[in-house]
Image 1 (tube, rainbow, N blue to C red):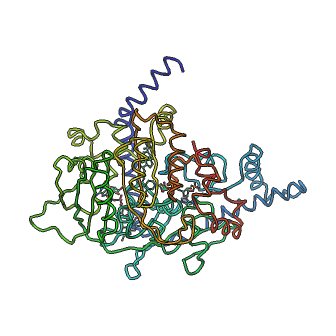
Image 2: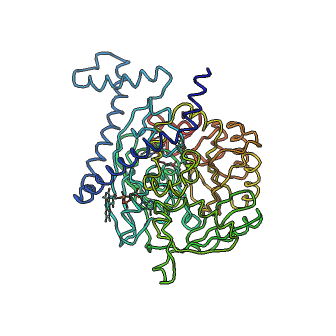
Image 3: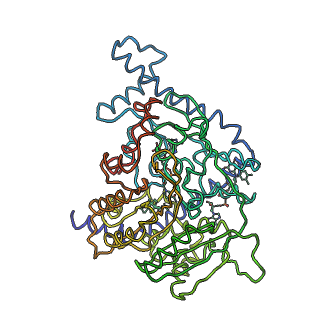
Length: 534
Ligand SMILES: Cc1cc2nc3c(=O)[nH]c(=O)nc-3n(C[C@H](O)[C@H](O)[C@H](O)COP(=O)(O)OP(=O)(O)OC[C@H]3O[C@@H](n4cnc5c(N)ncnc54)[C@H](O)[C@@H]3O)c2cc1C
Ligand SMILES: NC(=O)C1=CN([C@@H]2O[C@H](COP(=O)(O)OP(=O)(O)OC[C@H]3O[C@@H](n4cnc5c(N)ncnc54)[C@H](OP(=O)(O)O)[C@@H]3O)[C@@H](O)[C@H]2O)C=CC1
Ligand SMILES: CC(C)=CCC[C@@H](C)[C@H]1CC[C@H]2C3=C(CC[C@]12C)[C@@]1(C)CC[C@H](O)C[C@@H]1CC3
């Protein structure tokens, strides 16, 4: 790399905040404004539920179209005369698909959602070559308080859903923190939150899926109607069919939560407090470790109304300190503390600082003056950050940054923390317990167990000699030994064999062959592995 390039790379990385503050923040704001009014109009016209069936039909048509195109291809190989004037346009598009095949690509299908819009760390290479099916389904369809369910389309985001349910006194039991996470992504990938020790992962609060299958047919499945397909859907990453709606449990909620902060000053204490909290009746449990030996364990419960003497801390307000910084302040006082937070502020507590990722992009983002003047514009949309990152920034994240969530049995928490400390020394670390029921599927386990999600997001300490591939592979190997799992929105460097050992493919393979998925969709590994993403 020449000197000029090096200088440019330095400027692009060091001064990314200039671009973020003066371009991305206003752009994100305008985008939010547009989607707010769009949602409002859709809601006011109440048109969304009525249009669901016709929107689903469009998905079916595209799948059938893709399928028909395939048939034409095979017929064409037998005889060129099969092309008639009516089918000619289909054939042209289909030939493009086959052209890609010639280049070593597969004629598989994926959703047309561009890779930059997703909350996965990288973009799928396959988005460039697969047959893209528009699944433009963005609405909340029905809130059924009698049966305690909400029926939603797959592109409904967590911000949108909590905004729809909270004013009515309801919530889904697990609200993953980042506003832009979508129902579809959380079901076909996975979702977790600080209430997961009681409810499990996002898949465990879903009661019904509506899917368009590889042959274009529409099915609605529950655990009773088709247990195989129902349990195979989570973690399938869109490789069994297209999700067009899901029914999710809802539970009553109040407007406030009482959050208790317990500072801990040794790893043993942290593990003990965290494990006890995870087994407790508290509705919310979360830990943030600021070093291997120092952290804060939080437990929370919804409350009806604050007492007149209670001070409500509206942590979601633009001028408030970033949540993880606020939590860190309890380490200074060293005392247990409690406070009342508005429930939605709690749910979206990591949104404004994108956990602690934003401090690397806008280093002064938590400065009081900055918050007062510009805080209302924060955070930039993750999708916009992704869309506008230069190759230099990509390389920076590739070589000097780790983003991983490792799911290990809670009994392995201490050794996992020690291992991650040795290999990365990245802090803060996010700890979130979750219950893993003994359900069939990718995470099939013989009995229900408590797990913990250990989230490592940041720049490894220079003392550990971080090498992205080798370090991640060591961590993956460790997690596998613990009978744990890796979240797949991040990079996985496992080989296909290792991946199949980590995730139980028995049910998945059976359902794929039953539903003739092999021609229509790739395997999960071929969508999520590092080699399949850029
Ligand atoms: C009965 C009912 C039915 C509805 N049906 C539909 C429907 O069919 N289709 C549809 O699209 N919408 C529906 N809505 C949603 C309604 O349109 C929403 O109010 C609208 O989408 C605005 O959502 P919002 O998230 O932009 O709003 P806001 O609440 O103004 O939020 C703006 C943004 O800030 C975030 N935010 C809000 N509070 C906090 C906080 N404390 N901390 C951090 N971030 C925060 C939000 O997540 C969001 O991204 C329905 C609402 C109700 C009550
Ligand atoms: N707290 C949490 O739980 C967090 C979770 N995450 C992760 O982020 C990801 C979710 O991000 P999000 O942007 O919402 O989703 P994505 O667009 O990243 O979707 C994830 C996968 O689900 C597939 N998919 C999504 N919708 C459909 C559909 N309707 N039909 C078929 N396949 C579909 C996608 O297929 P295709 O590739 O074909 O589009 C993709 O493989 C998950 O992997 C989740 O684990 C990230 C941060 C926090
Ligand atoms: C709570 C759980 C289970 C996961 C949280 C993961 C997030 C911290 C990451 C998910 C996608 C990540 C991206 C970035 C930061 C970390 C995540 C939000 C970037 C914004 C970092 C800067 C890059 O230029 C773009 C990244 C996009 C994805």
